[in-house]
Image (cartoon, rainbow, N blue to C red; front, side, top):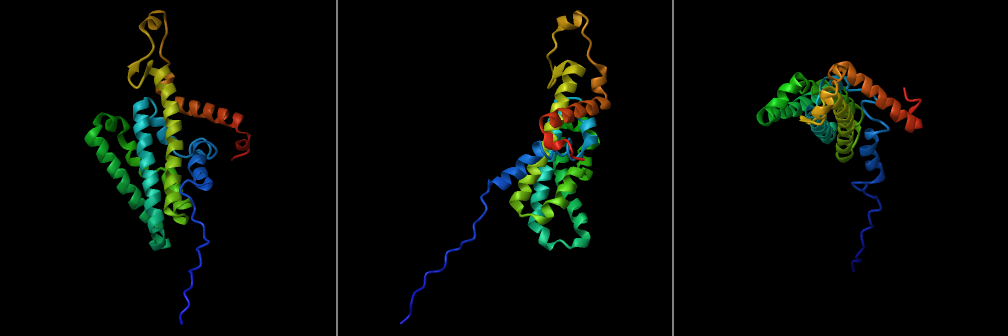
Length: 224
């Protein structure tokens, strides 16, 4: 006579898609571990594409797409990547995604593509993208890696847009191409700040943002 046995329940808990750990992975790059103001990465493009808000937003969206999906792809195939050629594989994945972004911009937003110029292509060498692949995606599961890519892309994009808002308003008297400084202000002697359209202005604004960030978040004071 056979005795039926009930299979033992699987006591291993599956991590929720939006567990506290995953939420922290997504949220930390927005402030506590921001890639520009804390990790000090991606500064070059922050200087070049923040004269106007529209190119800054498009650049931010492009980086979010590349960081998120490159992290996801590398996390999916990490166990089959030989250690000796891992960076070559990472570069190939990033180059493919950047090419997609570049071609889509040229097809549907050619004017923005011209303004961004070579900086879209230079996403391939962006330290944020390669840094997250090496430091996170190569050792994590696909979902956390995807969230990490989104978080770091967003953290980068937030700084770009904030800097671009100030530079366009004070440098051109406009926002998203629409004039917001009234003509009577110019008639009374108001002059746009020419410094704001030059690359050093981005450094000044990022420096002010870093000061503000550390003044309200004391745990960043000793971050080197």
